Image (cartoon, rainbow, N blue to C red; front, top):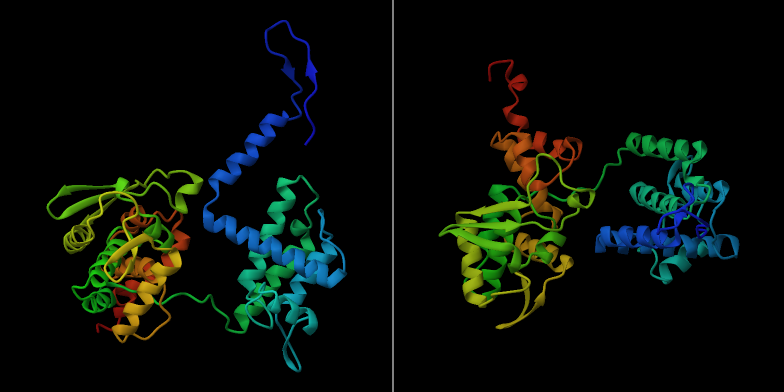
Length: 358
């Protein structure tokens, strides 16, 4: 971005040309964007751009530079999106390059990528072009049309998003039953209850939970102030509040963990080495707690940190809780992103399903 030229004025400050940003303002914009992005977003963007650079180098034998051509973006899509042909599912990524990307640990496995992964990587490249004020090939009609057709083809093949199995109230109780009175059991019980009861917190939010944002308001009630979340990156909504109640059994479990651990400040949920308490759990470790407890409970499904979030919404649907009340707890910004879980929870209570008087 070019520095502004200054025009003389009668005042104490020089005037700025209206069609340009000062260099200091441009730096401020970059800092605001960097500060607003979550750590997870930053990591995912960096990973996507590393992949683009490696793929481009392997495909064309040269270093990637902006703007990327429309033809290269189309090639990226057909290299990674599977399509049906007479031999079966095929894609265009050369096997040698595929093997190199896997060996470099830029891909997890050989073969086509999930369509959602391709869409995300194209979106990241699009953002890079926008921030650099470069002609954006990702917005070209041919690219948008190809992605739309790829999405439709995936649906026709029966491909669906791989959603984690929901942990609603019944499943949560099964997980809680596996938690004994050891320090690990007390911690895991508090973590599971906290994540569910405070509105189905994401694993990153559980890992980031801090005692400085927690206050006790009654013998069996806490208020946790959710200062940082993925939803809040776009600013508060009219119906949301950062204060999340933790009541009853969940409050009891949290109080027991704080008493057993002796924690008075810093991260709430910590790593444990036998009886020694370490630093904060990572988001991955939070998911591993859920998976380990689900295995101990003998539950079948694909469980992870998001299971508690989807389970909270599912249980709300089962109990007939109004969708706005659920969204105020979860911090979902749009009904579209939460309605699937909500409807699944209340599907058997749909009056239209009882037209035969069953």
